[in-house]
Image 1 (spheres, rainbow, N blue to C red):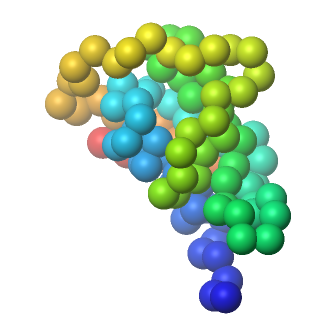
Image 2: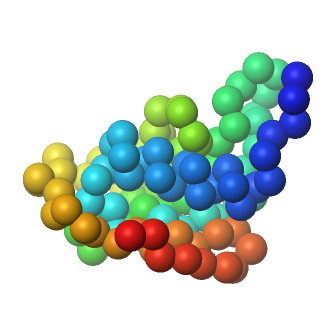
Length: 101
């Protein structure tokens, strides 16, 4: 088995996958831990807080993995048609951040 890419790359890929596949109107993803593989053969995943339409939702995400909505925050309402250029702020678990257009 090949080793996983560095944590920051995995987190960035997770945020983009979440935006592209599940929530096109996400404004910010803040990672609350580094992330890992929780068990033998499990997909890499990480806990994060996703800000959607001004509200925070606790999620477990990973590149190429489905989303888990956790922590009692519920699931956000269905996304309206996304604007063509919503910038996404990603705050990594190491405190660094970037804005992805």
